[in-house]
Image 1 (cartoon, helix red, strand yellow):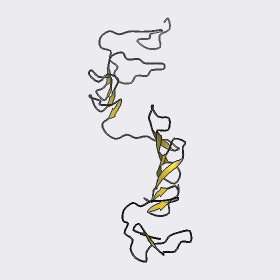
Image 2: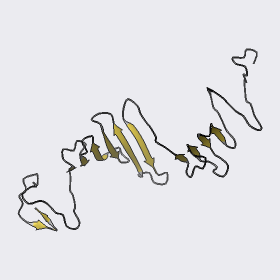
Image 3: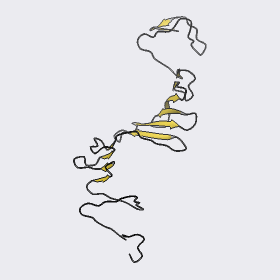
Image 4: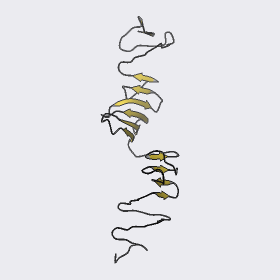
Length: 171
């Protein structure tokens, strides 16, 4: 270039054979491609020798596509989502969402339907996004085996009276 903006300015493609080091701050305004492996201060490793295609943060031996040693912080002013998706099954997508309203956590399915909510109070809701009890189930529930309930301390909502024992559960 005829008008350099720094001590080294490259207009076009550049190639470095050997070691290329950046100290202090560096910025990339377009694409930055690494062929081989790269390390940022031994903290972020991209495809280190013997671990091709893996990225390690805080580790020099990443055992998966992304391997993080230490805590991960994800934040934004709205909901924060961690999406788990199988590429071999269209319906195999789950989202773990930290809720911006009401402070809690939800697990959503492929069609963004809420399967379970954990409220900031610790209440767990299945089939409801606003659990009012330690376990709040909206829908049909099955208990397989024996359930123990303190006598005279439980209620069945919806107008059902405790009249019979069914599979260990008094209805």
